[in-house]
Length: 289
Image (tube, rainbow, N blue to C red; front, top):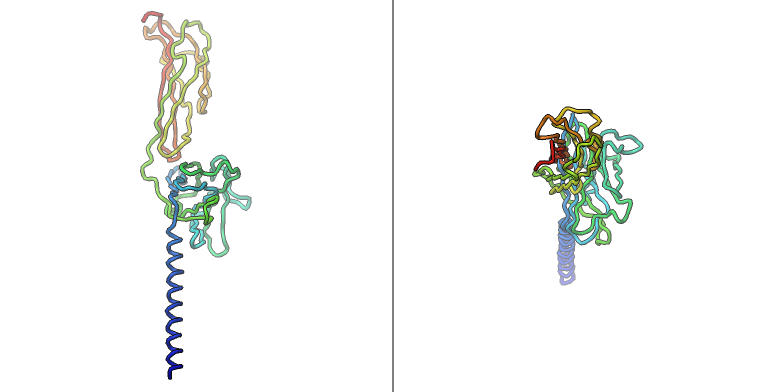
């Protein structure tokens, strides 16, 4: 009888031990899944002519550099999540007109035989391009036909360099408030004298700041005159980011205000918001103050 009781006690102890091990393993896995470092991946949405562009920005407040980024991939479950194939995808890969990558990064599309869904994976091609602690990096974008909510509510995965576990995942964070850039410009010289009908080189100084996009697209939008004149009075690469152009030092002499050239620049961030700013160059009627 004692032997039978001893066996029962041993079996009970074994059952308790196995339950304890299983519980510890579950808690360990759950804790591991929640140990996401202070990293965030934000998405903003731009719609245009039947397509949607999703822009991603990585914020690294952790202690290790980020060397890879996947959108639409849950590291802890290993499943692709993006339901719509990006525009222009072929067996050769992703065209540059469909996706953008920051300098020093490259992107591929991943798929499996188990699902029609995909994920996008960016990785560094230059070690210096890694996202250092305390930095954020924009320039990751993808264009899809129509729209697809999985590009905003799926998971991101980042890989760390020297950070213990190789990757961490969490859900995307939508940038709901994406204001326009703050833009200001000045030009030199801003007064042309004498009015000797010579083309004078002008240099613009452009200052742009943005809360989410470190590199808004700056463009010279237009240069116009308050006087009708020869089109060759203005020489500048309109539609580019040039800060150098030339203006004719001339005026008709009939307007006491003289000639005024108005120069307009724009700055567009990856949310699609645009700011404009102007500066003027004048050719006075005379030298009176």
